Image (cartoon, rainbow, N blue to C red; front, side, top):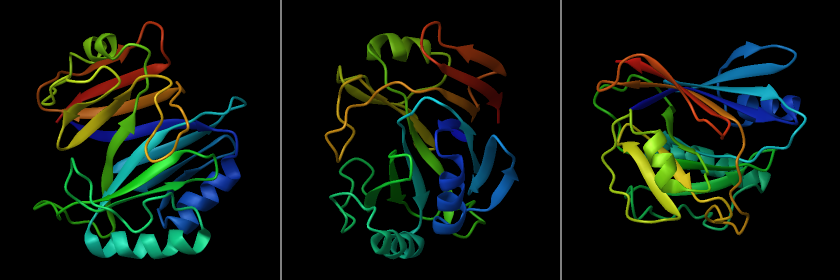
Length: 216
């Protein structure tokens, strides 16, 4: 499952545009009064204006050279979180760092091997997006039309998806690592591509999550 497009909300649109375009060095693909879109490798990341403060987690994937480059840029800004030396992810086995963007979202950069098909310099894509929920078993059931290779072994945290892209399911109230700030639900609209799913729209009945599924 590939994360093709992610739409999030923000209360500080201009600050977020400057941060993601100028600090993160992401190409600005769309720029309008109430939203903008940047390119994160093969993933499009869109922010739309909101009056309600959101809270998100996402992970950008890149190679070691670009990881070190972004570490130096973010270190100068003082936005790195506590594992600022770039510790190794126990799950993904790559270097990782966490930082706050202007909205206060907990974002991650994860170092991964260069994909054989990669022709991009810098970020490959967004490999993770957090989807908090009060009941992860129910959330996994909602996502069941999509393929999943990860066993559901924990009631407060689990991955759903595959090596190409995952939803990070966190029980509401559980802190997002590496902070003590609790996960809470904010609107997310996604476009994903999967070899094992036909084109469809999935709307959660009670949570503000919408997923458009495209065949690869």
